[in-house]
Image 1 (cartoon, rainbow, N blue to C red):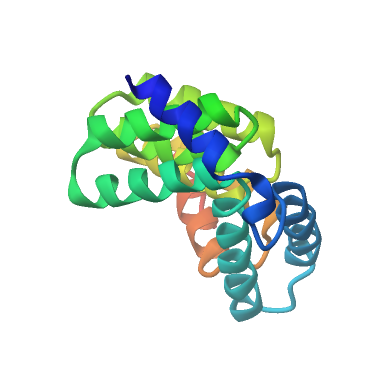
Image 2: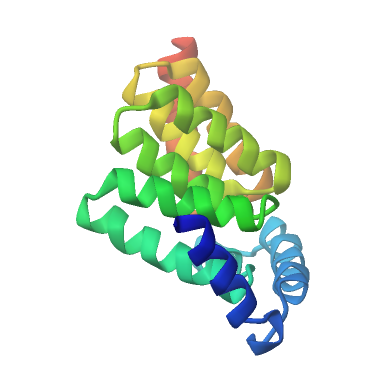
Length: 184
């Protein structure tokens, strides 16, 4: 039954209904990611991060966007299995949408499925190698497990992509100290 609903949504909500096509959203995100690397301040980086996250969240067809927004609502409501299912359905419709994998990773982690969350984050960065949000999430998951080296390595990737991320250097120094036992 759910597959029929997905097929219906895909047919009824054509990509032409978007203000921009998914490819245009992705191209715009690429330009912002280039700017993020050279952001002059943490404030500028924070603004760029938000714009990029919004673009990533809108880079799907209308059917995918409907599933994503429903999944986010369910995630915030604590309905993890429903959120996981909706993000999974979005991935079926658009397997290249990195944000769907990242959101599903969050839902899986909150549901206690750490290996599933990590696998989804790996898929997210395969589809979008500069997905600083996926590395950020991975760092926090590793930190929650007291895997300081993993948290540090993931945060180093965040800093490579987004050198001026707000409070990023402070977090990097703290994780380095915990991972390597060195003074920073």
